[in-house]
Length: 125
Image (cartoon, rainbow, N blue to C red; front, top):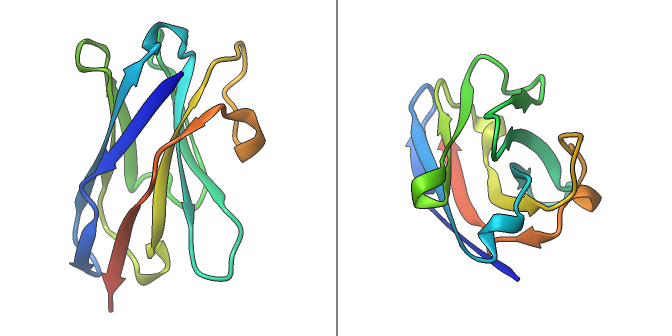
């Protein structure tokens, strides 16, 4: 089992920045990739970004490309999501997730095996 705990959410004005963190514990050696998803009220959970645990290869949703950066610190078993130029439409609960199955970087929730509890991000206009 892998346990994931997110932190760093909050309230920010449009144009501002936030950095989310996700700390992994347990059988972290089994992790192939870590992703971030978000879910706004009344909407489906959507892919934001993913990073390969070993190579650092990344992939982003078009809606966040150029504004968000995903990174990982293997020594700390932690993945980060740096969010800049935030917009009101970025408001959502943000979840981190762990994928045990190579070789592709999954972009759908079904591709992930473990989930954190989520952290709220609210962007005011």
